[in-house]
Image 1 (cartoon, rainbow, N blue to C red):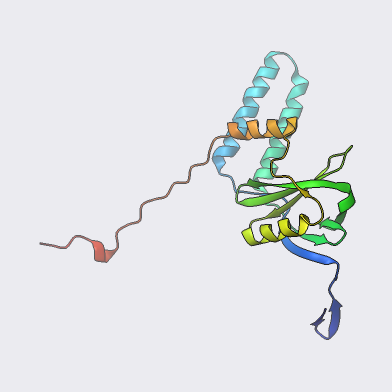
Image 2 (tube, one colour; image 1 turned 180 degrees about the vertical axis):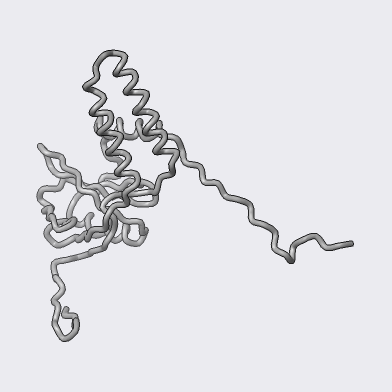
Length: 190
């Protein structure tokens, strides 16, 4: 398993079962309407907090708006994902199969998100992102040989809260302008 690279021999890692490159997180370019919604919501919350006299709470609201703004306009970087014989490696950080309890699949925007959950007491989540159905099937086939596939994951309070808040966001409408008629389709004189 050697590859030649300008006269040098590169040896590929025989322990890697599958690898791919994808974004760090699921991402969809947002329109200005979403950003206006974030700012309007923050302004409304700030006014309510100011009416109660808790001026110090405006700082966390402003910090949250900045975080939402930064995550909305900044596309994520790409990272290397590897599934090896001993565990999962995401961006150079390795997680052994012994520390993982199971995994499940969700879909966010145009991406499939494979979430591997660690054993108790920590319950860390490792997110594997792909937008290809073939890559998803390969990941499921390889991971299911080592850890449990959970078809319907148990949602925590945080998961439920995130889904409720995301359902409150306004839907983005895609406006498709009608195509103009071609010159050959113009009305013919009678």
